[in-house]
Length: 68
Image (cartoon, rainbow, N blue to C red; front, side, top):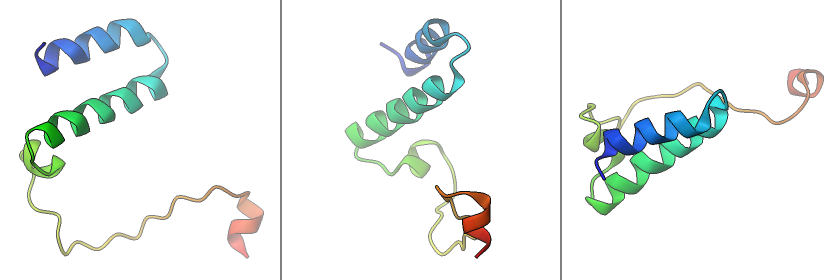
């Protein structure tokens, strides 16, 4: 099955469950890039992200605890 066909099928099956669709979409791209032995960024045709700084933090606590 083509990747675009698989994604279209997932969109149809997931309906308005966007979080589910996002997780499956990411997993499918990751699976395909690994099978091709390529980093995901390269499979997607993006520039090499090496050396880029990130300032994003994902927290799993309450806003009050995060501010401490």
